[in-house]
Image 1 (cartoon, rainbow, N blue to C red):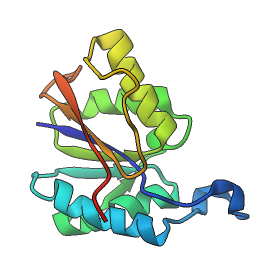
Image 2 (image 1 turned 45 degrees about the vertical axis):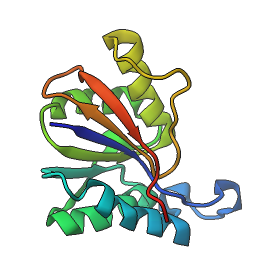
Image 3 (image 1 turned 120 degrees about the vertical axis):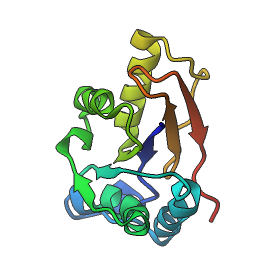
Length: 154
């Protein structure tokens, strides 16, 4: 069963945002990317949808959660700079078909740790675009493989 590690969709320029970063929402393009996740991942029997509490992450997986009839579970283990906690959460959820939506630094931390310490084969300079998904394959931790899904075409 795959575990899906999603980087939040496009949320615009953080330097242009004058309010707290936690409440920076998706752009119109980001909302289209979020809707596109339904087509990209909707064919899987998703059991849980977890997200960083940052608005842009929650908004990224809301359409997918709604389509799957599941709530979005907010988790501080997926917020910015939570790399080690996100890796522990990934370990805990291995064997489930869960979706984890987080930030670029957290995706990179998890993938780096899986590559450097668990031997997961990843391409050099692996991609991590906004709205993209890494599919961590296998029923156990560490995953047996990983594949990159670029952001949904919008």
